[in-house]
Image 1 (tube, rainbow, N blue to C red):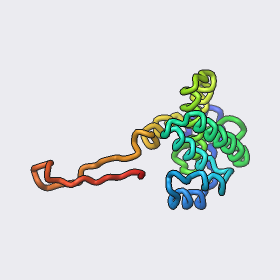
Image 2 (image 1 turned 90 degrees about the horizontal axis):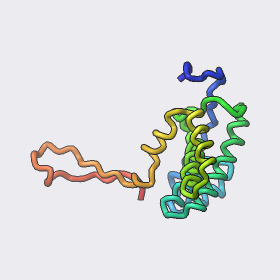
Image 3 (image 1 turned 30 degrees about the horizontal axis):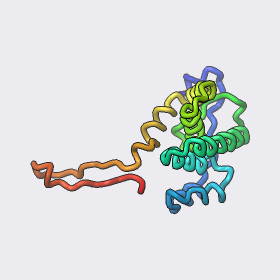
Image 4 (image 1 turned 120 degrees about the horizontal axis):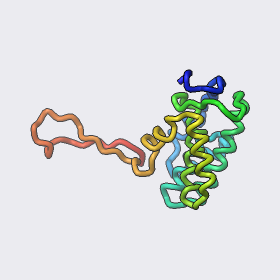
Length: 169
């Protein structure tokens, strides 16, 4: 994407959060709030909380969690040298918490009819990484918590093949 950066601003690469990733991987989905409490500056923890609240129909809670993740993300971006514009590439995994918080805030804002915020956040996401919205929608949706993949089978009968279930609880 280097040719796409018309402002000639360097891409922003946030530092990794191995302790947050480890905590999220060993924490039950319904206890993610403990991860956010232990790591309150992590946009990723707040994005996870926003997604969980949204999946459970708690739109205002999702909005609030995403708003915190958004503000914590702005703090992290500024600390990394971001000056209000420039690319925040999705391909750099530590950037994903900020981008997911932006997306979650946009999604909740749309649900409550906050149209100006939706437009602003859509622009922010597209300016940060034009692939971010599509990647988030394909990789982090509430409708894809469980993916069922038929196991490879050498038998001709699909009825006799096994099924592998992958996904979250």
